[in-house]
Image (tube, rainbow, N blue to C red; front, side, top):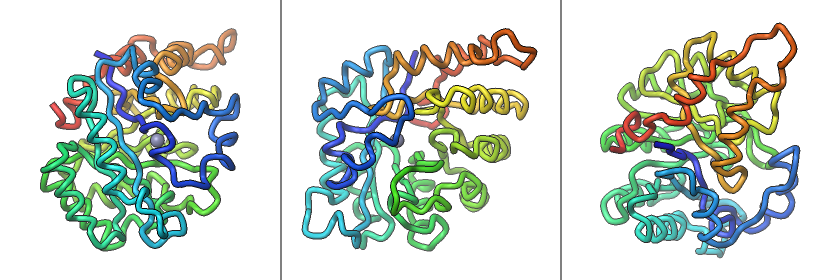
Length: 291
Ligand SMILES: [Zn+2]
């Protein structure tokens, strides 16, 4: 069963106004991301997956994008995701987007879990511009551990200019995992370009995983991360994901199966095809306690 562990709603519901146009050409080096504003596009792109996890991102409550624009409150983002999930309950699982600086953050987590039926939490400390080890962030992890909600963290760099890169380094998760040993966490994008740091963190902590979403279009890095994951013996901690609308399921599977193309005809090592199929079919929901 194919599970896409990392998808976003159509962009108009995901990113604050002002971010989309200026950065769209920078997400992928090979082509611009197709901007979509409708759920039908989402469902079409997800077709090969049996289940998909979807989440928005909550903007900084004191940031310029939120000021005077209630459309971008975390509550609004979560309502939109919950409404979509309710329309496809057999297919979709929603996560709750919160910002630790929101004075109602813990109430929103409770509302998301109890009223909206959201099953996990989405955080992106660089995009949200908060220190992931500061007390208000720790309160979110504590809540998530107490209620068995997995957290999907954006990890890795980003072209967004006012998103501090250091807050997205995978090594920070090591400290969080030591404080909250039962908390299930996913490090998105293998923490690119720090994939080997991600490997050592997920190797060390039994409940910490990584997804390989939105990495294949840098084919050398993609092959290298899979070889490093092989050498560090963490291929079984890697979950399948797309980061839709950045990529889709069919495209991501196709490129994953062709990860070794770039070293064909060389003496460089190759990724085990059986391990690749295991990632595509991985029971990510079971590993994260979602089923
Ligand atoms: Zn994402």
